[in-house]
Amino acid sequence: MANYHPELEKIPLNFLRNEFERGRVLPGRKILAEEINTKFDTLEKRGIKTLADLADALKSTTKAVKFAEICGLSEEYIKMLRREILSYLPKPVSLKEIPGADKAVAEKLAAAGIKNSKQCFEKCAEKDDRNSLAEETGIPPKALLEMARLSDLARINGAGPVFIRMFRDAGISSIRDILGCEPEELHSRLKQLNEEKKYIRSMININDLIFCINFCRFLPIGLENE
Image (cartoon, rainbow, N blue to C red; front, top):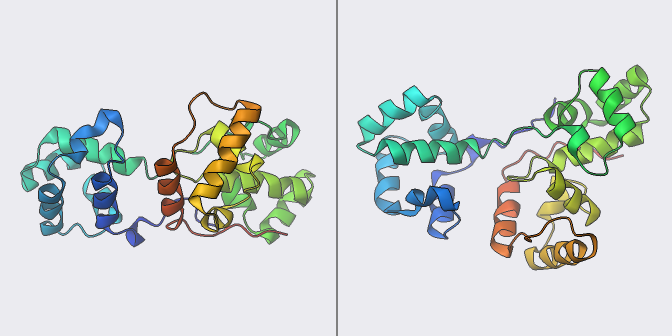
């Protein structure tokens, strides 16, 4: 079965430190950009080397509060850090909410218990699994492949239904495609598409797109094409 979420054990803590230093922090989480080196040095002294270590230490609110006491860091900071790390494990997207997704196919998949991007990716990423599902549901393998492609793009950090559609319409069919893109060229392509089709009011900026591409390097490449 293909892995949907990023492999946090392969993402060093310094990845997060560097993102904060570059100012890639949501407006409501500005506390994460304060005294970065001091706080991250404290985390490292407590044995936090990867995002998997951090996710485990902050697994629950109770654990997070206890960890804050042990580290001598404020509860507010640790709770914000927990929200940040949880955002790296994006919630699955409902297939029927993705603009342009085949509704008939989405309904048949839902009847088979496959309702969101995680379920779809795990069931359709590999060619043999798609062929088996095609026999069970009567959905053509090509239609399942397209759903698998949309589900693969749903793994991009921060990608909601509309952004999934934008990436797909820009000719991006997989995480592998994202990794092969030059940020400036892809940003220009997305900007032009948005001007033509008016997907969103505020266009994703180049720094956020660079973050998306960098983050995709930590996602397992599980999608098998035809």
